Length: 136
Image (cartoon, rainbow, N blue to C red; front, side, top):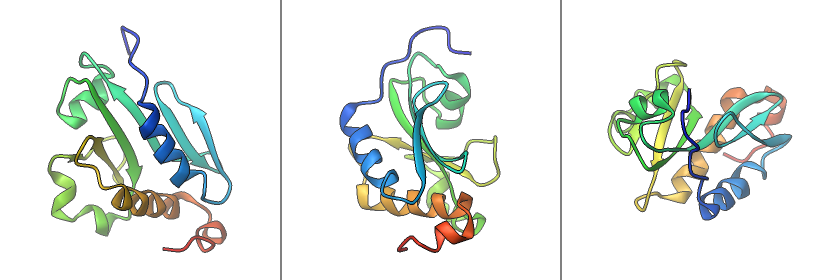
């Protein structure tokens, strides 16, 4: 449980993520227990939040850092998650779902790559009819 107030996700990061996520069919953005999440039919496919002072502890452990750091989690097909890149910084693998991955949002970020990852994440959780409407 978070013992102090975490910093807000940087506005420029939220703006870029919103542009990607809200362009997908039937996506809803909402405040999460910390940070912001995007869902399709009540299934979260993206979550961005800040780690600071080792909180939230589960994210700090998964990302291997105490912060401050901005992190994004998303879902991917198992085959894609097996790629070596998802096991090394700036990526990390939380343990709470078998198909979840995370990425530190820092100066190295490639927003085109993030867009593709979020489209893939949407495709994992969206109903087939909605997923078929998205250009991959």
